[in-house]
Each structure stands twice: as structure tokens, then as C-alpha cells.
Length: 324
Ligand code: CO
Ligand code: CO
Image (cartoon, rainbow, N blue to C red):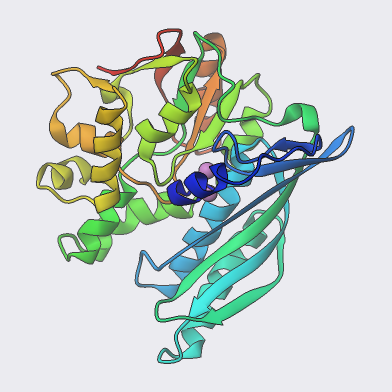
């Protein structure tokens, strides 16, 4: 889900009182969770957006990976998907076909099929998936159930917002986008599968609110966190671009919101890095809170399976977010 405006509007609706709704709208979690039986829960999410890269297949793959990510972030396994798309009459319909093909290929990589979907006419293309997953109701990993002392592990580098903005403004070429594109296309499947072999207390995927924004939700009012800014992996070139002022408006808003919410940046953290830590991500990695002793083994297991991962800090009882 992850949409700020949506969260606001949903909060104004009457509360959900169905006891089988295990995760609803109250905690800004990544997906809704519904208990079908004592050992089976449905995990449902939908995500779609306008093109962030020029190539239609690449856009489709990124949008699908991004939508699937919310299921992985719950510790669940995706089982089916439906496509949701908007497309203008003025564009060649073959482009829509290529977007859908990219998304379908990414869904296949996740081991699921896109069973159908719905398309409407619109001025600007939009594409994404509604994804259904399953999990044992007791094995759901929520976004706000971390414990003091938990280590925080991040499973992708930060900076996709800055890099896509730089590409759009022609500040960088196709070649300099390769790392960001590979990162956005990468499923969080392995990160979630390996997470399931540990005792993760909380997890979320880093998307539009940026690393600090999603961390703020994870900590909630109950917990705080210390982040080692220099331990956060960054996409190559992103810091230089951010220091030249290249960033999406959403990232600046995220930084302003973080400061307004009392997030404390130490003086040793330069402005460009502060902005990057708040950079609005597309198809970002998982942010996982797990017992400190499990952090290094989790990272090792991920690296052995080709996933970049880093311990970037820890949760604590302070209710303050401090970035050093
Ligand atoms: Co989402
Ligand atoms: Co999410």
C-alpha cells in the first residue's frame, strides 16, 4: 500500500472490526492480511505507477517487482497477480503489450502467473499489479513489531529516486542507470525467503517514504533507532547527484517530514546524505529488524545468494531516530 494520501483517507473511514483481518489500515503496513483458517492467511496488496524508465519491458519488470515486494515484506509467498494498467489512445498499443510482457516475465520469475487484469484509458500510462500471497497467520512479519536491541538490515542500496530523476533530466546516460535498474528489477524474494529462516521481528520494504520514513513507521511511537549513515549502501553516483541538488520532490518532502518528526542528524552527516537517506525509492530493499546475533549470519546468507545486504543500525527504546 504505502501511499501517504491513501493512509490519511483510510484513517478517516470507520475502523475494521472483522477479527479475521489480522493486518488492516491502522499501521501503514505493506499489505492487508486476512485469516482464512487457523493455518492460512491471505496477503493482499496493489501498487502501480507511471513510467520511471523509457524501456517498456524494463518499466513492466520494475513495476511488477515493486508490487510483489509488499508481499515479500510481510514474510509471505505470492501466489497470483492481476495487472492494472492505464494507457492513452495516442500511443501504439504494442507499447502496452511490452509493458505487460515485462511484468508477466517478472511474475514468472517470482513463480506466479498474472491471471488477468484491467486496463483503462488515461492521458499517461500507468501499470502495476494486485498481488495475492499466502502465509501462516503466525508467521506474518509486520512492520511495527520490532524489539529494542534488534539490528536493522537493509537488502538493497539507496538512491533510485535520485538516479531516475537524474536520467529524466539527462544528467546521466543509460549506462549510469544500469545499477539502479538492476536494483529496482531485483525481486525481494530471496531476502524474504532467507528472512523466514531467522527470527525477524519486523520488516518492511523501502519505497516512497524513503529509508528514514519507513524506519519511522517501523519504530512507531514505541521505539527509536540509531542509524550509521555511512553503513547505508548507496547506488554509485547517487551521492554526487544529490549534492548537486538532483532529487525528486518526494525525497525533499520526506526529508522535511523527517526533520519535522524530530529525526536527529548528527553534524557529521552531510546534507546530500541526509537527502539520500530520505530519497523516495521505487522497488527498494527490505528493511528487516531481527535479533542482533542473527544480523551478521542473515547478511552472510544473503550475500552467498547474490543479494547485497548491510547492517545499518539498531532499534532502541529511546523513541528517537538518530542518524550518525
Ligand atoms: Co506498496
Ligand atoms: Co511496502
